[in-house]
Image (cartoon, rainbow over all chains, first blue to last red):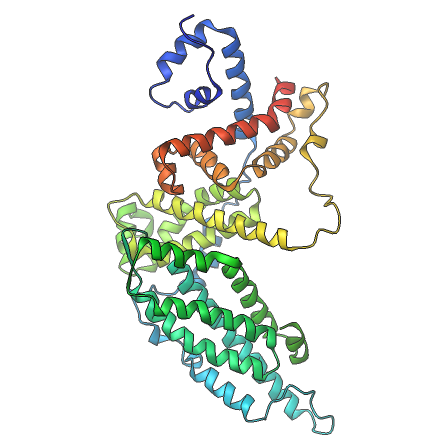
Length: 253
Length: 196
């Protein structure tokens, strides 16, 4: 025997056919029963892993993937400018109007006057739903820009000019939604929007080109404290609340 | 030319030019293998579906950054691995945030469920049992170990490719794969030897 027993690490490399170990270990395995047994055990485990099948999607899987994906595809930013948003979501116009409505006292955080009839309550519900729709859309846009930043290709320096412009627009929207949410008695939502606003501001104010180290710090800041996950939760709550009664909306935000 | 007739390069070029049918061709070409990768990374169908959707969405948004000389499939896989890692991390954080009022009946320890040495080979051959045990063993791997192992074992990626995907040096990549195999052996060896 020309060598000691094969190390487990070498057996793994051998199994996956890594160059440089094959010929030497072939010779050893041919003459060493103990190593052959060890290799057989390794192969047994890996074969078991391979045998655990992945469920095969149905024959129309590709079609279903596309059906679900297509509505979510926006034209990428190099195709169209952000200015081409749907008119009804021309923020900050929506936020400004909502804020005006809330500040104007037509909508209060107090329960509707029992003698005031149902009209005020209906208006209130409609405005809160509109707020929730707009906030859901705003959070989705914020998620996108933060995801773009967090996943920007690294290098010696990183160019964030496009993301900065986008974040800058979102900051002012965020501020209006935050104020509106606070006026509507949704303190929890207002606090979360405040946190979002701060990170958007950080992106908007960073230099166009930042060093790899600065980029890594910014990226970590975005990924810290589960921000992206919480944004997803916040968005789904907003979308859900857009469909429910105003009392429940205030209670849960 | 219909979308079925495009080569990969043609479809990528067309998609970068704004043709949704070209992107659809790429989706149709890769979604099934992305699902398999997603399933192996996350261990369940629902999360695998999420990985497929998120991967394709991210790829679409970043098409402008894709260098056409590179391999589109490899690029897509890299995005998918990162999506799966993001999802796993998010779920772990969510789980750790939740209160744990008592033991989860679904989360049975694999030690409890490993059959006694005398179990019959027939029983061990039940694929659902094997799948369950493998799934538990895979869940014990760290995110990096799982990703590296899946890419090596199932996808046949080279050490260099895996290192590039995970941001690891070659030696660290090898070590990560080795640790994954070691853990799997620790979890599955009793079952594998009983089956032999």
